[in-house]
Every structure is written in structure tokens, then in C-alpha cells.
Image (cartoon, rainbow, N blue to C red):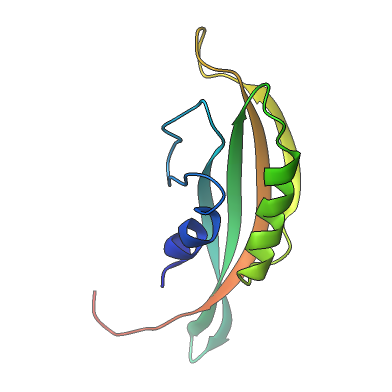
Length: 120
């Protein structure tokens, strides 16, 4: 299972998850991104990749987000991601007339084995 699928499967019971942007700004929703770093080299190739993950939770401005914020950390940890740090990125809207959203960022990590198959 890919890291993308793990994140989606883990967070979907709480709110909709989309890789790039949330579709419905009237309810909580998640997006995510990550960087990877090769680690544990052997024979000049990495044995693992370290994923530095950012999960973004967006909630409508008046939403009481405390319960979903706590649940986000719990489900990520239970799914074998590191315990996430939470960053309150504040209120934001993309342009005048757009919904104003609460934005929280969860930073966590996961390590996955690298399989080098020789083909591209």
C-alpha cells in the first residue's frame, strides 16, 4: 500500500481526504503532501525512505474543531505514523468571497522499505 493510500484510508473515517484540495468548504476536510529522504544505505542504494508528511485540516470558521483535531493525531499514530506535531496556521481564504477556513497542519513521519526492481 502506498503512503498516499495509507493517509487516505486512515483519515477518511473522520472527514473527506483529497491529495490536492478540499472540494466542500462547508465541512472539515483534509489535504496532504510530503517529502522523502533516502536512508539506511547499503551497496550505494537506500534500504528505506523517510517520509516527512504534512496533513492539512481545513474547517469552516465557526466550526468547533477540537474533537476532530484530537482524533486526527490519534488515528495517525494508531496507523503507525509518528505522533504528529500540530501547527495552527490560522484563518485563511483564497480570495474575496471565498469561505474563511481554520487551517491546522499535522507534521509526522513514516519510514517505508525501498524496493529496487531494476526497471523504470
